[in-house]
Length: 322
Image 1 (tube, rainbow, N blue to C red):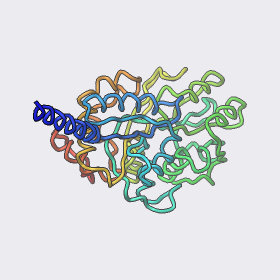
Image 2 (cartoon, helix red, strand yellow):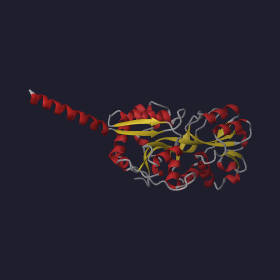
Image 3 (cartoon, rainbow, N blue to C red):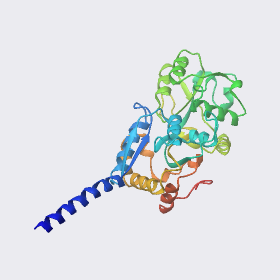
Image 4 (cartoon, one colour):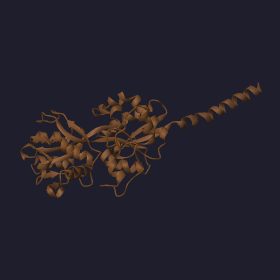
């Protein structure tokens, strides 16, 4: 009897040791997203929920100041994953624009969905192509912003700089207000559609969206491989019935090079096993799919866990990726 009680106590003690060990085997990951009123936060929450479903990972979505802030958090290893536009990822990895030095510990995990270049112009401005911007009053985005850097890249391919425009550097609200007051002729936006800024502009003045022809698009993508060709469908904005060909950048999930291969592999497996739940969380999330997972990912090297996952799923890697 005493021996049986002793065995029972030993067995109970072993269980108490094993329970914390089992709990500690669960990987805890935080995903830096964006502001709570933006697109990144709800989609990030849906991804965290989907990834946590299998039980081997416990993921949470955290609000943040989006792409540039997320790069800094990740490269300092203060958070595990984050939403970052692929153009910002490229600049960070290569030490360009707002990044003073290359942040080479960035690693790409997955491409999510496109964020489109909107070059919105007043219909009576005479702006119908990139070349027509010369000498016009154009908002290129707030200083140090991704908008500004993308506008600079596009103009460079067109053989122009900001000095060839009457350039203003305003945030979204400032650009919309100036447009309504007839103080600017056009403005660059980088966002999913339909975007509140262009929608607001279209209610005050007739607008046009500048179409990017194939020749220009090919030159742009060759010079800056983080851009991809895309289309803003006709009917998205008031008064614009035809489709508009335009470049886009991709929203990515990125991590750092110290994340274990097995963790990123499991993260992607859980995500795509439950991707239908993520797709139902927001209109833009419908574009998240395995077929789109490698679009625009050449901005920084793929994480080894991602390489393993995509190879197993039989995906074709884009040029310069792997």
